[in-house]
Image 1 (cartoon, rainbow, N blue to C red):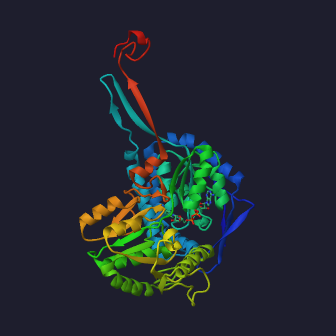
Image 2: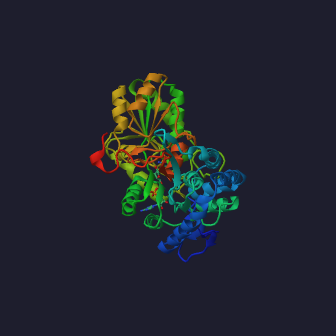
Image 3: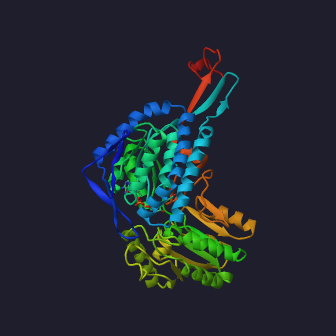
Length: 490
Ligand code: NAD
């Protein structure tokens, strides 16, 4: 049985209140972990603030160098990390391994490029005067993250935040607290000084305490509902906030696309990670000429997916993360069926997998905009497919959502692709591609999918303030625009 403590000021501290983390494939309790309250959160923030003074004065090359070691350490511990991720959130080991590898790649990317991205600009003004910009750390960053990529998402904030000279208090998801604790241990082992990273495990109230504490910024990834709560609570303190929220991405297939490739992409995009991905194509729109054959083959491929325990080799789809998430999904499917949608396959808990939180990969057709599956974020293995007649209709349907995270367009015509990319209301567009992530490319949405960017040069600049310095090297005793105005001629 695992035992989880809090990392505060470089020490692992036990606590009185605890909660359990369990395996969604079996319901088995994996361990008990600290439930941090206001007191512990305050202590962590004080430790982070103390540590920030010397950390920000450590050279950026030294700070970045530690992240090369963190990237190596992640690779060294790949086996144990991927197993822990699968045990805490259920997905197939293969997908957990990809997360571990991507995390190492991303951390090293910021270690290698961070210094260049934080070099200020020189701005000439006049023969005697010039300006420059300096990027300075924001201070103490509260990093609050979800369970669906429990290693990648915390570290894609921690790496740029720390390299930029901030210190961090991490609040991992209550469903994956032990992965959060491992992040703390890896950082410590790689040489991050005491107090520079602190880990407070806990639930939504722990997150709320962190948002209301003496921090300078919240870097949040999670649901739109929690994002709105954070924004409200941050208003009181005027924290800087970065919000990466949910999505209901459109997947638009034109008749000139490579249909087989589009179907393979749609099935993988929708069902990997058991459909629990922010940029998963939650609404699939197919041009009418190819709709019947697309749907038939999509359903065939969905029926062939192997559902089972993430630890079993050969599993394509593991359980959902929790009973609560599964119940929400069941209600969304029931609502669609009540309003006329057709279940082409799936739509129930598999008979052979009653233990754990499994749900059959499901395909719905005949869906309409007023159904919950089209209005809300569907965070589970359910694909909703509908048909469009022309490009204008595809654009209107795709944009008919409060979300604006990503979208994908499938066509061989580059003009169609370029036009669609300009018309879709979202932060990321893939063309003949789906759900790829590159550390050098910006990540983030608009509308109810949030604000701010992660990854890339834009991501690291979320964690700094831009200071403008203006210098006059001239010898003038006064300026044309100073007093007295009576003698001034412009
Ligand atoms: P969630 O909003 O329920 O929880 C996220 C984190 O916030 C958890 O650590 C939770 O304990 C904490 N929290 C809950 N209430 C809080 C409060 N009032 N104040 C502060 N913190 C609080 O989300 P989830 O179920 O863990 O994650 C799934 C969601 O995350 C989906 O909507 C998904 O689309 C989104 N997501 C978005 C991205 C992106 O890049 N845009 C990436 C991954 C996941």
